[in-house]
Length: 278
Image 1 (cartoon, rainbow, N blue to C red):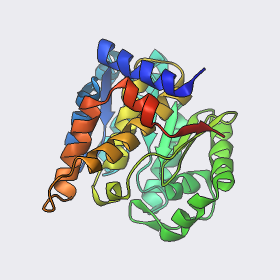
Image 2: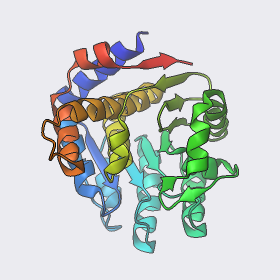
Image 3: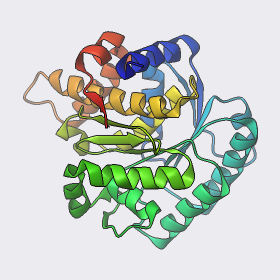
Image 4: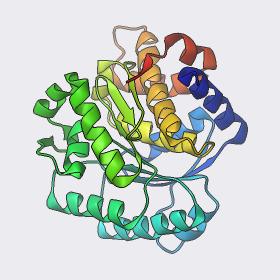
């Protein structure tokens, strides 16, 4: 299969079918995540009350769990929603924001991956190393400089992703300068993106939400993960190119990212996508 063509086809399916993507996410980026799903063509819902999450999951096409602003109430909702998603055969996308930064976050990440079946985990290198039980450093919810330096060794990063993927039976997407997406057997690398994306809060969360939207129209979760990461990277590149004024900054850039997802065409993916198999 031509992977980039597969991504372009998924983009068209999202816009045709408008999958409902249920989020239990963080209050810092909830609005951005909802808008990025809308820009892609999906339909977001951000319900986190434990009294309704089971019903909401039941009518959804995918469930996104984001650990950005954890508290006891939302953790309980995540666990209830995740178990319902498993019973209903609905894919779960986990964003383990800040895993390894505190014992609480690490404990909750372990509970989630041990108590439910996850389709895709997307995180930075520090978060993925923490979940894998590998020595790591964290800088709040960001990857540490030491861990970022290791991203240049693609074989090392791929080995970490494959190890976690095979242990959990899920797709692992490690995002960074070069993104690594693997199901334990096959691996894709993606070189799209722009360094200014690190100056905008929530680009990782938005990427996870895009993955959730793509999961809502396919059971090929390796392709769905690659589609979400590639779409976000391309939007960052194109959005940066659309900054026309010397007064433009990170706020304008975020808007341009949203606009670029909204305007994304299959030909953009085919002509500009830097996606290749490992």
